[in-house]
Length: 275
Image: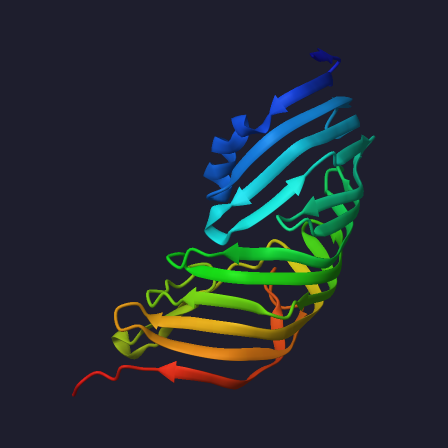
């Protein structure tokens, strides 16, 4: 129910067994290939007067989210989002993979005019990639452990902590030779030599509207990597890699990457063209 009085909108929302598959088409259109099923229950009341205020809860009932391209599956069973005034509260909110391993999210998201996040994400073991279809651009199995904190306003987030890949991971990646430049990042210089005068015009990247302050250590355990360079000739690079990387603040939302990844064993096949 929605009511408006003196430019203040008040509302009340009751959900009982709402079928989340009904929003799957919208999610697929905005987030690519994603599948969702399960039900949502809840009771939310609040008002809107330039800022959103909400109180109540939303409870997930046997919800499953799949991203087939990456073999990613996560489940939310009896997890609850609490709404308190201008905050979304996550208390022992668990994402569970297909092997019943959990990723724990705790904290809150502010619903102010400039939303702010204060979240802790912890997992001892969680599966990000589990794709057996070799026709996909990326396949294999990748598990991680995490201890991350995300805080700050959306336009100036800070992400800190550690991400560890788990031993016995394996990744197959098909390299795409046709890589397009990002129009927002490239710099083009035009120079005119007419009339013995040099005139230079530059089109440069726009100043990023948001930034992320990265401070994340990435520890890569021994991982089998198989990179298919050319699909026609089946040229490949195969290696066992491990190392340590550091993500630090770069330009805009993209981090700077430092560190070392080494390989002590592997093989390369390259079919040299005839001259």
